[in-house]
Image 1 (cartoon, helix red, strand yellow):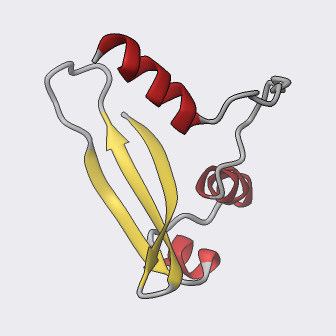
Image 2 (cartoon, one colour):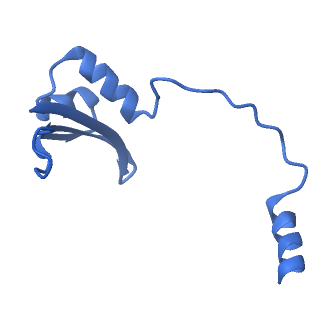
Length: 98
């Protein structure tokens, strides 16, 4: 048996809510589905974690980064500006293939 967590932010009626979920998984049994053990939803991240019974500070920090979309590792890719707009590219494509 193992425990894993997920976290994400979802806007509801103009406010951001944190959703924190705690699951039990059984990798030793291939056909057994994960079990949702704790679920917290709140506008305050720490309150959502308390509701979901997530108390470990390192896990909370990782989940907050996950919810905010901050990856563990990131690769920078330099982007060059396009010389033509998307509209003109589509127009050109459809005039050749349309």
